[in-house]
Length: 186
Image (cartoon, rainbow, N blue to C red):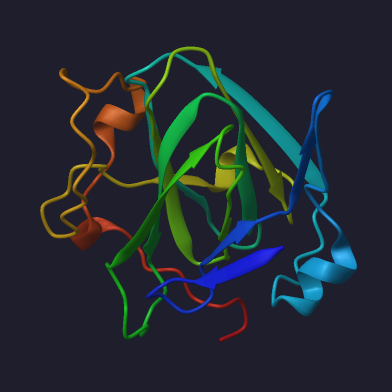
């Protein structure tokens, strides 16, 4: 597998090896030892999946302590533009983002460590998005931030119309109104 560091420490793009032939393909989507050697040592305990239509924007979300989560995300069918925003208190890259296009075709994965808000814009109908989490989901710890906050300036791809948001995602505050993420015990 190939691991690419992004401009934000800890956020990584992973491209597993794909073996193709006339029958189709085979790829190893996760191997704890290999990922640990590549700097992704999260102990994943929950897998999630969502299916969305083109134009759906999910995010920006994270879990507050003590239920913070690191995520390893990928697309099984379709394509998304995936974003991680640094919300770590005192981080030199606080408020900056890293982004990547994930698709079934390119097979890339995006590692989003704890301390980041995460979201994605769906680029194709019937996109199947999968992610591993290193902590169980806890509804009372769910947090969110505006996807279009000008203080962050995420250049979401133009899909020819306004994104489709959940009611909850339309009410999130901007970066200036969130409680930055702090390492538990810090």
